Length: 365
Image (cartoon, rainbow, N blue to C red; front, side, top):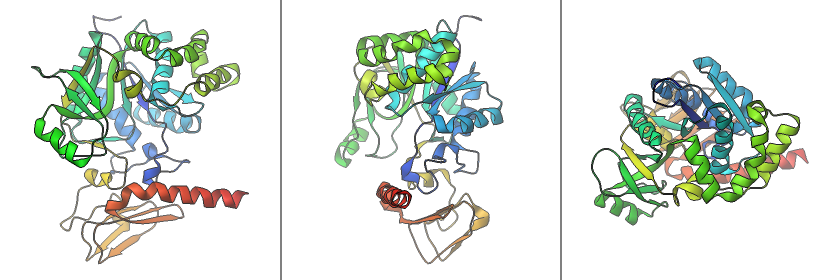
């Protein structure tokens, strides 16, 4: 290995279908492949932000049906990388273990940066600096997590409580579930609490050992993959795929937070303030679009018309959409579907998706 530092390999989680962003995000083409800001798809932007770390290569963990689309994104950026297809979604613990076993076939050891494909980050330079700190912690054998300086009492995120300390890195006191509003307000007032970004750094050897100790069932279920070799672990064919199906079938759906981070020692949080947004709902996407004088927003400027409207957002994929005399409304057009929603109801889009699935399966039967 060159110099003292290890190779850095980002592992991007890009498996979700993002149902709360229906109708734009759907199972055929989920949100990570859409350009929501006008600056490239979410997956493309995620990869671009990692370039200052000069990663050795990149691993994308996704569903088999998104394998080709993921390779196209890597090609567009000119990033060396590998796509690992999951036979079925089993949350982040299984995805991380899958990627770790693959990387342990290629490197004696490397620093893994785990990050979701659907985040928005306004200040990529600051973000890269925070990641650099996390990588340095990982090289010391620690499990580093990125905490985001909370800007308001958000109830939709989990929090990380930092132990008191000096400098830019703190020991983790605890991971805290999504709070109610009063609790979130208290966290902000007390200080030392950070939004849990779901972004981590550790070495492949350290995380593998944590799986062995803290998630033995996962470790055992995935052990047969060790016999495959790197090419086999990547393969979506034959016996290799069957071995992967067996591994994923035999573990429960557990997040890496719950399975490892909440129980492990040597955990540190690296706080950052880089304009982070988790693009989980139509409401959250307002954060990434510049408003006009009336607070209206759209990335599809040529197709969005606002007349006497205030604080409205339009996402028009192919058709022209006009909003007249309304306020606090989102209109989304994608394919043959149109969503018109009062902004504060963005968490209810899942209910629409359930109804649509029922209607669609009725058509097929």
